[in-house]
Amino acid sequence: MAGSGTAHLRDTDDVLVRVENMVVEFPISGGTVHAVSDVSFDLVEGETLGIVGESGCGKSTTARATIQLPKPTSGSVWFKGRDISKLSDEEMRRVRPEFQMIFQDPISSLNPRRTVTEIISEGLRVWGPNDSWSLDTVPELMESVGIDPRYGERKPHQFSGGQCQRISIARALVLDPKVIICDEPVSALDVSVQAQILNLLEDMKARYGVSLMFISHDLSVVKNISDRVMVMYMGKTCEIAGSDELFDKPVHHYTRALMAAIPGAEVNVEEQTLDGELPSAINPPAGCRFNTRCPAATDRCRTEEPQITEVSVNHYVACHHPVLG
Image 1 (cartoon, helix red, strand yellow):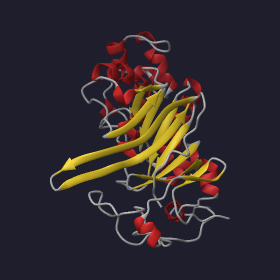
Image 2: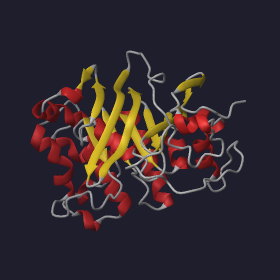
Image 3: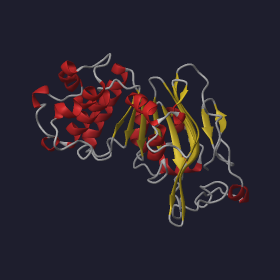
């Protein structure tokens, strides 16, 4: 089931990003879209947080609202101990280079009129050199992501999708960010290329000390790259735990249904499918938002929203009837 709470937030010195009670709503004619509803999470230095769920569950909106694009309707976003949700536009502009994004469609996310060298170095031309990179060392960065600097004068359409994603990674790294948001970065790529890009992200994380927020609807991809995983449903948090723990012992009925749907997956769950359609985000169900599709739903689930509680060490779930044992 999906609920709220902050019991899973960590109180350690290495927490880089801390999001508390984030709400993102979009007014439309006839109502309000409740995209993200009271979501909390944190990210420590050098960690990869996977955010997973069905299309429309709010995972991309959650990540983008973390960098104030768009600004959350309410809630707070702390970065290095500073609440960036209260910064002015100019103050946020100066913080934003610390956050970079890698997008789902690698080709359309690159300016077709610019050369690869211009695309990668644009951030340096705006902000100037940093501790890691300058205009003179862009070729070195290109080599580190697997792009031959001799091809720097080519345009994006002259590269494959996988090569364009490597260019996107270099563009993100050039500003020496602390956090990179990866929004479905391999879903548009062939399976063989996906593995190469995932390995590259792991190498870049280790080499340059960045933290990753990795958004995907593909649990097998999330399992391979994430240190910690947060499962979302209709703008709410369902379950959050270390990657190995979550996949070995999923306790939320929605998480278990997602895992049962992985082709050929060796996960310790019973075969379980979801019935019914995803409810409207304009008029979400009362109580637990998953109650309309959950096989274990009771009257309590239809009236009372569950709170996030710890079911084992560093394993948290928002459910009135979790599958334990």
